[in-house]
Structures are given as structure tokens and as C-alpha cells.
Image: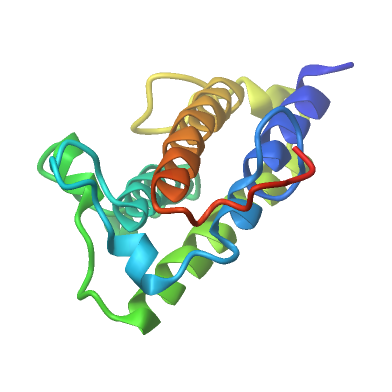
Length: 164
């Protein structure tokens, strides 16, 4: 298996293809607005929505840099501010999820269209090539998907029986 195929499979497993962990599209499918903003009482964890905002920030920033549209890339003072929520409304929750799905799919399209030499070209503003940055983003997604599943379980929002 070549690196592009491997990375495409890894990328899909983060969004909509079941693998060793559930993909984010399925994990978020039945999450209500109230569940999305909920945090444990001790305040030590981010909410599901904050985690989705964080994932969206890094994927959108990478996409804008890859496309050379750095003027449109999201800005943050530090990593902590990437978890910041927009105005907390049901509509904004839905928009955040959809934007994440759209950005993730756009990066997948870029990867799918890339020639071998494109995979190893350094992306302006990033430390590594397309293939290494997307590999890191996929691992980052998988880590936070686990947190989202855990938060869902803490709220009783995770079905007792799943196919994975």
C-alpha cells in the first residue's frame, strides 16, 4: 500500500469510516446542543463543542495555508483560545459541525488529487510536507475523538450497544 492510500484511509477513519475507533460524524450524530456544551462539574475538561472548535481551527488553518489563502486562516493567541466557542446557539452548533465536516472533506479531496511529489512539498507556514501534516492532523483528530466519546459516555449519551 502506498503512503497516499494509507493516509486517505486514516483520514476517512477520522470522519466517516468505521475503524478501531468511531468516526467523528457518527460520534456527533445524536449529540444535542445541551450535550455539546456540557462539561464535568470539576471543569477540568473541554466540552464536546469546544473540542470540535479546536479540531476545526487546526484543519481550517492548514487548509487555508495549503491553498495560499493565509489572509483567511483562523487566528488564535494560543492553543487554549482554539477551543473558544462562537455564540452558543443551536444554529451555531450545527454550523460548527458542518464546517468541520466540510473542511475535513476538502482536505481529503486535496490529498486524493495530489501527485506523489505534491505529498512531500512543504506547505507554507507549516514545518512539514502535506503528507506529514495530514498524518499529524489525523492523529490529533483520533485523540480528541476519544475525548468526545468519553464525554458522551459521561453524559449517558453513548448507546449501550454499538457495532464498534
